[in-house]
Amino acid sequence: MQFDITPAVWKDFGELLRVQRRIMRETEHLAVTHKDPKSSTLYALAKAILHRKRLHTFVAKDGGNIVGYISGISGKFLKVRGTAYLVMGVLASHRGRGIGTELLACAERFARTRGVHRMELEVFENNTNAVRLYEKLGFVAEGRRREAIQTPEGYEDVIWMGKLLESNTSSV
Image 1 (cartoon, rainbow, N blue to C red):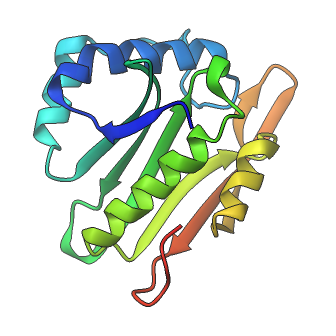
Image 2 (cartoon, rainbow, N blue to C red; image 1 turned 90 degrees about the vertical axis):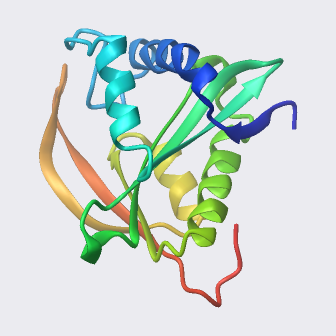
Protein backbone atom coordinates (compact mmCIF):
# COMPACT_ATOMS: atom_id res chain seq x y z
CA MET A 1 0.00 0.00 0.00
CA GLN A 2 1.56 3.28 -1.14
CA PHE A 3 -1.00 5.57 0.44
CA ASP A 4 -2.05 6.72 3.91
CA ILE A 5 -5.58 7.17 5.15
CA THR A 6 -6.15 9.77 7.85
CA PRO A 7 -9.04 11.77 9.22
CA ALA A 8 -9.44 14.98 7.24
CA VAL A 9 -8.33 18.05 9.16
CA TRP A 10 -9.18 21.69 8.54
CA LYS A 11 -5.94 22.31 6.64
CA ASP A 12 -7.05 19.60 4.13
CA PHE A 13 -10.26 21.49 3.33
CA GLY A 14 -9.11 23.46 0.26
CA GLU A 15 -7.28 20.54 -1.32
CA LEU A 16 -10.20 18.20 -0.59
CA LEU A 17 -12.61 20.55 -2.40
CA ARG A 18 -10.26 20.69 -5.41
CA VAL A 19 -9.98 16.89 -5.48
CA GLN A 20 -13.76 16.49 -5.21
CA ARG A 21 -14.24 18.86 -8.15
CA ARG A 22 -11.61 16.99 -10.16
CA ILE A 23 -13.36 13.68 -9.47
CA MET A 24 -16.61 15.27 -10.70
CA ARG A 25 -14.89 16.09 -14.01
CA GLU A 26 -13.35 12.62 -14.34
CA THR A 27 -16.26 10.33 -13.64
CA GLU A 28 -19.65 9.68 -15.14
CA HIS A 29 -20.91 7.81 -12.06
CA LEU A 30 -21.80 10.77 -9.84
CA ALA A 31 -25.11 12.59 -9.71
CA VAL A 32 -23.31 15.94 -9.54
CA THR A 33 -21.20 16.91 -12.55
CA HIS A 34 -18.67 19.57 -13.41
CA LYS A 35 -21.46 21.35 -15.34
CA ASP A 36 -23.62 21.83 -12.23
CA PRO A 37 -23.37 25.09 -10.28
CA LYS A 38 -20.69 24.93 -7.60
CA SER A 39 -21.09 26.02 -4.02
CA SER A 40 -18.62 28.63 -2.98
CA THR A 41 -15.73 27.54 -0.81
CA LEU A 42 -17.13 29.71 1.98
CA TYR A 43 -20.52 27.98 1.73
CA ALA A 44 -18.87 24.53 1.75
CA LEU A 45 -16.79 25.50 4.79
CA ALA A 46 -19.85 26.83 6.64
CA LYS A 47 -21.73 23.60 5.89
CA ALA A 48 -18.81 21.51 7.16
CA ILE A 49 -18.71 23.53 10.37
CA LEU A 50 -22.47 23.23 10.90
CA HIS A 51 -22.40 19.45 10.44
CA ARG A 52 -19.06 18.75 12.14
CA LYS A 53 -20.59 16.51 14.83
CA ARG A 54 -22.36 14.33 12.25
CA LEU A 55 -20.02 14.51 9.23
CA HIS A 56 -16.71 12.68 9.27
CA THR A 57 -14.30 12.53 6.35
CA PHE A 58 -11.19 10.45 5.80
CA VAL A 59 -8.69 11.18 3.05
CA ALA A 60 -6.31 8.91 1.19
CA LYS A 61 -2.97 10.56 0.52
CA ASP A 62 -0.27 9.52 -1.89
CA GLY A 63 2.97 11.39 -1.29
CA GLY A 64 1.13 13.87 0.90
CA ASN A 65 -1.46 14.70 -1.79
CA ILE A 66 -5.13 13.78 -1.43
CA VAL A 67 -6.13 11.19 -4.03
CA GLY A 68 -9.42 9.97 -2.54
CA TYR A 69 -11.88 10.49 0.27
CA ILE A 70 -14.85 9.00 2.05
CA SER A 71 -17.40 10.97 4.01
CA GLY A 72 -20.01 9.56 6.32
CA ILE A 73 -22.84 11.60 7.72
CA SER A 74 -25.00 10.27 10.51
CA GLY A 75 -28.70 10.92 10.78
CA LYS A 76 -29.80 14.26 12.16
CA PHE A 77 -32.65 12.93 14.24
CA LEU A 78 -32.42 10.51 17.19
CA LYS A 79 -34.23 7.65 15.48
CA VAL A 80 -31.83 7.65 12.52
CA ARG A 81 -28.63 8.58 14.30
CA GLY A 82 -27.41 4.98 14.07
CA THR A 83 -27.26 5.21 10.28
CA ALA A 84 -24.34 6.64 8.32
CA TYR A 85 -24.73 7.65 4.68
CA LEU A 86 -21.46 7.28 2.74
CA VAL A 87 -20.05 9.20 -0.21
CA MET A 88 -16.69 8.23 -1.69
CA GLY A 89 -14.45 9.25 -4.56
CA VAL A 90 -11.00 8.33 -5.85
CA LEU A 91 -9.06 10.14 -8.56
CA ALA A 92 -9.05 8.23 -11.86
CA SER A 93 -5.25 8.02 -11.73
CA HIS A 94 -5.45 6.07 -8.46
CA ARG A 95 -8.39 3.72 -9.06
CA GLY A 96 -7.83 -0.02 -8.99
CA ARG A 97 -5.13 0.20 -6.32
CA GLY A 98 -7.20 -0.76 -3.26
CA ILE A 99 -7.84 2.80 -2.08
CA GLY A 100 -11.63 2.44 -2.21
CA THR A 101 -11.44 -0.81 -0.25
CA GLU A 102 -9.25 0.79 2.42
CA LEU A 103 -11.42 3.92 2.62
CA LEU A 104 -14.53 1.79 3.17
CA ALA A 105 -12.76 -0.34 5.78
CA CYS A 106 -11.63 2.80 7.58
CA ALA A 107 -15.16 4.23 7.53
CA GLU A 108 -16.53 0.97 8.91
CA ARG A 109 -14.01 0.83 11.74
CA PHE A 110 -14.83 4.43 12.63
CA ALA A 111 -18.58 3.77 12.43
CA ARG A 112 -18.25 0.81 14.79
CA THR A 113 -16.41 2.96 17.36
CA ARG A 114 -19.32 5.41 17.18
CA GLY A 115 -21.98 2.75 17.66
CA VAL A 116 -23.33 3.07 14.12
CA HIS A 117 -25.71 0.22 13.32
CA ARG A 118 -26.04 0.71 9.57
CA MET A 119 -24.04 2.14 6.69
CA GLU A 120 -25.73 2.97 3.39
CA LEU A 121 -24.88 4.39 -0.01
CA GLU A 122 -26.18 4.82 -3.53
CA VAL A 123 -24.49 3.61 -6.71
CA PHE A 124 -25.32 3.89 -10.41
CA GLU A 125 -26.30 0.49 -11.79
CA ASN A 126 -23.71 0.71 -14.59
CA ASN A 127 -20.87 1.39 -12.14
CA THR A 128 -20.19 -2.34 -12.00
CA ASN A 129 -16.74 -2.01 -10.39
CA ALA A 130 -18.22 -0.09 -7.48
CA VAL A 131 -21.18 -2.49 -7.14
CA ARG A 132 -18.77 -5.46 -6.99
CA LEU A 133 -16.59 -3.69 -4.41
CA TYR A 134 -19.56 -2.89 -2.17
CA GLU A 135 -20.90 -6.44 -2.44
CA LYS A 136 -17.44 -7.86 -1.65
CA LEU A 137 -17.42 -5.76 1.53
CA GLY A 138 -20.84 -6.96 2.66
CA PHE A 139 -23.19 -4.32 1.28
CA VAL A 140 -26.52 -5.63 0.01
CA ALA A 141 -28.76 -4.13 -2.65
CA GLU A 142 -31.88 -3.01 -0.81
CA GLY A 143 -33.73 -1.06 -3.42
CA ARG A 144 -33.64 0.58 -6.79
CA ARG A 145 -34.66 4.01 -7.98
CA ARG A 146 -35.70 3.31 -11.53
CA GLU A 147 -34.41 5.65 -14.24
CA ALA A 148 -33.34 8.17 -11.59
CA ILE A 149 -30.25 9.43 -13.44
CA GLN A 150 -30.22 10.96 -16.89
CA THR A 151 -27.23 9.98 -19.02
CA PRO A 152 -26.32 10.77 -22.63
CA GLU A 153 -27.66 7.30 -23.54
CA GLY A 154 -30.98 7.69 -21.71
CA TYR A 155 -31.75 6.92 -18.09
CA GLU A 156 -30.06 4.73 -15.51
CA ASP A 157 -31.20 3.16 -12.26
CA VAL A 158 -29.64 3.97 -8.91
CA ILE A 159 -29.15 1.07 -6.51
CA TRP A 160 -29.56 1.71 -2.78
CA MET A 161 -27.17 -0.51 -0.79
CA GLY A 162 -26.79 -1.04 2.93
CA LYS A 163 -24.69 -2.92 5.42
CA LEU A 164 -25.71 -3.74 8.96
CA LEU A 165 -22.92 -3.50 11.53
CA GLU A 166 -23.89 -6.07 14.10
CA SER A 167 -21.90 -5.74 17.28
CA ASN A 168 -20.60 -9.32 17.10
CA THR A 169 -19.47 -9.01 13.45
CA SER A 170 -15.78 -8.47 12.87
CA SER A 171 -14.57 -5.39 11.04
CA VAL A 172 -13.52 -5.40 7.37
